[in-house]
Image (cartoon, rainbow, N blue to C red; front, side, top):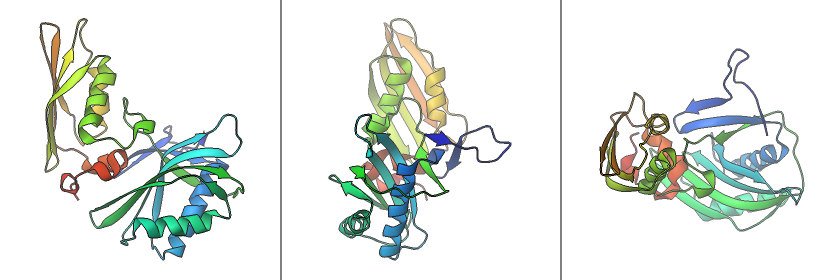
Length: 247
């Protein structure tokens, strides 16, 4: 995949919006063809100002044109899952042979989010001088595991960044404030820096993370007072509780 800088003087290859951090991809024919089909689907459904981002994009190493994608489309209109699928299927006949599509729907903050996972064989390619956005999740989150359940999401972040086994002892997200405590096995100590970096992804200010050790057990406490709740949407899909999102 090829990336470009947002500005000539910008050394970063990722951008940030209200739903997370994203890599910008251009000159990927498969990704641009999928986006073209989604844009046509929006027009077919009379969706105004529709948006589409990739959650994941993979290409088969042996079969040319076989790709797997997870995507997030969002718009103000209240479109049903079946209507979106049928419109996308009609448009896709020009470009793809589709596998089974799994759809998940979320209505929050006066927006409809449609998430889908599908394998497809690309038969026709659109050459477009455009770009697409691909999710750049925090360290410890694997896109092939998306969508997560919220409790498991943060447990995986702690476990993978501490290289140990943990349990979630308490957990609360309310009115944009996040508090959690994790109990982890600790024979050789735990470096909090990777955990801090990952939780900073969700925080508008510096998170507070503390560590208590006792008898090879480490208790890790995490506190975020200004949690970016909308960042959970691409990671949880329909597993999210709408009341957890601060609009």
